[in-house]
Every structure is written in C-alpha cells, then in structure tokens.
Length: 147
Length: 402
Image (cartoon, rainbow over the protein chains, first blue to last red):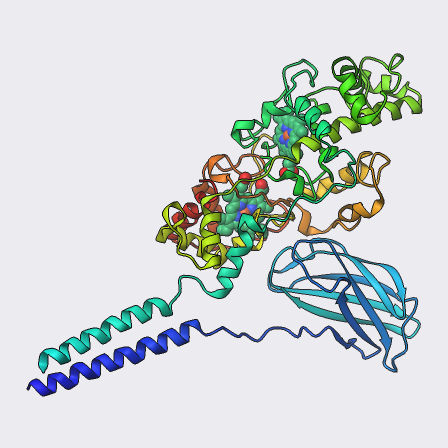
C-alpha cells in the first residue's frame, strides 16, 4: 500500500514539475504573428515602375513630422522624372486615414521624390498609397509600415 | 519512506507554483515596451520655438508671467488668463464651460506641457502658443479687450520692460483708444480708419504680447506621478516599492489601457496624447451653439494673420510644416477634438471639450458603450467592459495624478 502511494505521489510531483516548466516556456515564448509585407522596394501594381520608399533620415519615429523619399525607376532601371504623385493612406486595422496630408514636395534628382508631412501617431500597421503619373503612364503602389 | 515521498510530492507542487509564478510574468515584453513609452522620463527636452525668437528669453517669460496674471489685460479689468487657468488647479478651473466676461462654450484646458502641442484649443484653431494667447484677449466672452487698447496699456504699464525685450514701441499717439479688426462695430470702424502701417505697428505689439506669454507658458510642465515611478521600476527590473507598487486592480487597469480597451492608440507617449484629432462620439451639450470641432477650425487657422505662414512669425517657413500638411477636409475631422493629456485628469473633473462628463466613471462608461456620433463617425467601438474592468481603468487613471 505504502509503495503504491509513493509512486502515485512521485508521479504526480513529476507531472506537476513538467507542466510548470512547459507553462513557463510557453508563456515566455515571443509571440510571432504573420504581418503585412513590409518590403521597402517593390513593383507598382501594373508593373510600370519599381518604387522604393525610405525615411529620409533613416529612422522612423512615432509622433514626429517626417519626410520620406520615394524613388521611381522604370522596369529597365531608368529614373522616372517629372512624375505627378498623389499620397493617401491610413491604418487598415483601425479604419482611419492619415493624421496629416503628406505631399510630394521636391524632386531630388535620379528618380527620387521627397514625400514630406508624414506622421505616424500610433504604433501598429500603417499603409501609404501612391498614385503615380509619368510619361510612361499611370500606376500605383502601396507600402506597409509597421511600428 | 511514505513520508519522504510525500515531501517530494509537496516539493514538486511548490516548484510548480513558483515556476508558474515566474513563468507568467505580470507583463509581456510588448506590454513592458508600451509602458516604458508612457513614462515621463521619455519626454524629450522642449524643442526651441523658432517662430518665437523670445521663447527662451527669461525677461520675456517674466513679462509674460506678469501679463498672464494681470486682470488689467481685459476690457473691464476683472479677467486675466489665470481667471480660468488657475495656477493651483493645474491651470484650469473645474468648470464644464469656462466663464470670463461671459460664459464660453468650451471647457478650460489644463496647461501642463502645453508648449509641446502642435495645435491649440480643443479644435486646434491656432498653430502656435503665441498665436493662441491672442485669441482669449479679444474674445468677447473671455477677456473682451481689443488690440489697440492692449498696445496703449502695455506702453503705460510695462513700456520699459517691453522695450528692453522687443525694442522701441511704435508711436501710438494717433492710435485710437479702442480698435480691432474683430470685436464691436465701433472697434472695427476705428481699425479700418487706421493707416496700414499703423495697423501693422499695433499688430506687432500684439504679437509680442503673445510671444511673452508663450515664453512664460513654456515653463509649465507635467510632474512625476505614481505611474512614472512604477514604470521606471518595471523598466529597470527592480520591484516597485512603497507607493510605486501597483495594486492588482491598478495593474488590470493598466493592462486594459494598453491592451483590450485600446486607449493607448490615441492616449500615447509620455503625455498620453497623440496630438491629433478624433471623433469619439462625445455628445454635444444641449443649449450650446453648434460645435463641429476640427472641421471648422481648419479655415480659422488658415485665416489667422498670426499663423505660422503670416508675417509675425520669426525664423523661416520650415517651422510651418504642421500647418502646411494638415488634413483640411474629410469625414475624419467632423466633430473631431484634440486628444487631451490624461496626466492629472483624475484631479480635474469635469471632462471633455464642453465638460460633458462629471466623473471618470462616466468617461469610461462612455468608451465601454461607444455610442454613435451625432455627426461624423466615431472612431471608438463598444468595449463591453465589466464593472470590474471599468473600475480598474479608473483606478489606473488615478495613478496619473498621485
């Protein structure tokens, strides 16, 4: 009788220990969720241009008015000049638009356009959408930025 | 033998409890990061205001402070900025709608950290601290003065102090006693009869009054609270002790604030505000004039001669990007109001732009129910919080006041 109890108790103890360790590991594991495509360079919707989008000063800071640079190349790699660019966007998950109205303010040469007046007021998934018209035609592209 | 096994079992159980305790930290890493971003020690130092070259001049701040508390700065000599912005009440007045020469339509805003705002007033109809100060001075319901009278008053009472900061005062001998492009018909007629150069002179003195007051207001900053002490301890890994320790209810409230209740989407950063405008479905107050918030403020700030793009700005136009890139239309700014800071909120009821709610319980109940907006679209969605959760949110908000 005594020995049965001994085994049951020891077994219970071991099981409890295991469960505790598992719980500890599971609960401290970083949660990895699949997010939107955050690549900073991509083909435009209809493949007319290759667009890349980078913060002008390298860092993205929440709450600051920032300028970014949109670089437009043709599929062959030639810089796109004289493009008319309209900017829109928002937070897809919050169903609201941008807190500012960014604009293409300067042409910096070599297919590079300064997009000024961008502000991210909260962390999360933002989307910036560009409608581009140039000699080669009109196309659009969206970039996801996750803060 | 049997006793030994029993002891082993108990030990294992104890290990489970201990491990379980460590294994489930109070906050996840993501939560810790968010909490750290709300702490006062992450508040950057105040940026210079290039549109106001006197912003950090002590003499200007001293004159500004005098003017802020001076009831002589009003039509009938009874109202100063401090009538509504009371220094011992977080620079507000505990009223649902402010009372100056008359009763206004909005609640007085507290001023801690105000110099960090890109926009001023509940609807952001001014774009600098100095341009803001000129508005109540001439508002018939607040100080009810006029700029010609203010220029004369400055010359008479503070001429020397003014000139030491801003240089010589213009010749005011032929300026009418009362004149302004706003205000009574008589004031307007007197203003329109003034030569343009003279109008400019008076406007310049008027703008400088605003710049001195703004220099003073830059010193009004938020203070450390229990929440900040808790957040610093959490960030450094030391166990919060004494009043920095949070009760289980306060911890639940904090978790809700940065999690399920989504408060932190708008009330973020060390001031608990994103400095932006949102429709949160707060109902209008019956009997007050139509108030559509931000959507009507856009044209007002654009038309303000003292805005950043106007000629009274110091420095260059690169300081005017907020104005240049503001959202000018669209449903998102209909009945949108500025996200207020929540620091000190528990000690300064009532709440919202016209004092719509009397207690924090009512505020949290509003977010939980999230009624539709009377106009425009509310950005908040029903949370259906339990009684316990609502009380926890209130308990957390209080930690931003002690």
